[in-house]
Length: 441
Image 1 (cartoon, helix red, strand yellow):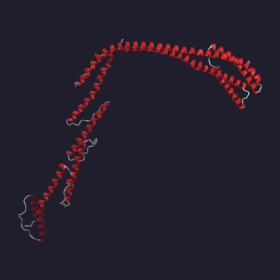
Image 2 (image 1 turned 135 degrees about the vertical axis):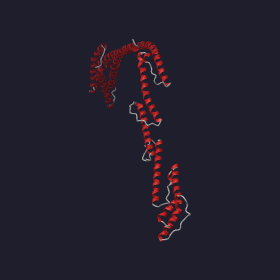
Image 3 (image 1 turned 180 degrees about the horizontal axis):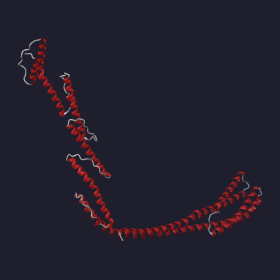
Image 4 (image 1 turned 60 degrees about the vertical axis):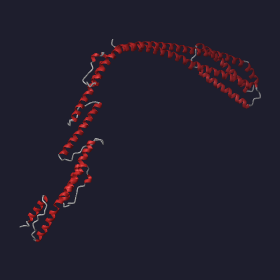
């Protein structure tokens, strides 16, 4: 039997014990509930009702005698006493109606049946006394009150005492039954708990012994895999055959995990190596799960950025200033710097074009605005300005002489030959101008 079945059988045995304890608990609880129900719903309300009936009877008897023996009572007092007697009767009737339908023991039922006719007899006697008092026949009322009514009152009191005693005895018996059931239930639960603890401890010791051996083998194999991974031996895999067959899936899971991790890492390493050598590989098309797909997206973003940079650099090398890089964030220094360089070159181109147009239109004093540029770009613009200054300074004198000769020729004068003109391109310009006008012919 393998470990899993051992555990299942042990747990089943524990479940059976717990089920037995649960059933015992349910039975005991039901027994306790029944006994307490009898006390709370039957005995206690019954005793309270009988006590109130007895109190009401006593109150009626007391107020009746007050009416009989005190002739000097005012009408107000008599009315108040009559209302008190009426209220006592209402209390007695209400509690009578409560007690009457309650379940009773056989003994209590017999005593109650004996009390009912005695109660009716006293009730009639008491009503007869009240009627005589109302008719102002006090002497007759006194005679009946001290004889017949008194006897029926005492009889009711005696029987009421018996009924109360029986109800109290029944209530005590129900309470004792509930306590006995609670004691038995407590004993059963304690026994079940002790038995369960013993069984669980025994099962735990056995399982611990088996698991210790199995886990030791599993730990050794996992340690081998981990040490290999830490040592950079990413091709190393665990051997599931060295582990208990119930735990081989763990080793297989480690192997699958390594394969799932190392595959994307190898792809990432390959692409990073190619990018580090200046190559711009195509984007990764394979699909990966979770964070590996995030790594793929980051690599593809790097490749896209590298492609943009290469395209922009190639355009820039060919003199095309239309290339622009899309910055991935405000921290994308390469894109920002490349775009700034392209913008500076484009501004330099526009400035030189504007300067050329100005010179073509005869605005020889126009110069490039070096303050718009920085570094080498400012130096280029300064060089252009210096070149223009040098050219204009070199041709200033020949242009002046040419202008004089032109003015003389327009008047028909022959200009004398000049030999004081500087050599170089400026002299060639001057000679070309003279040759075109032929002043020596």
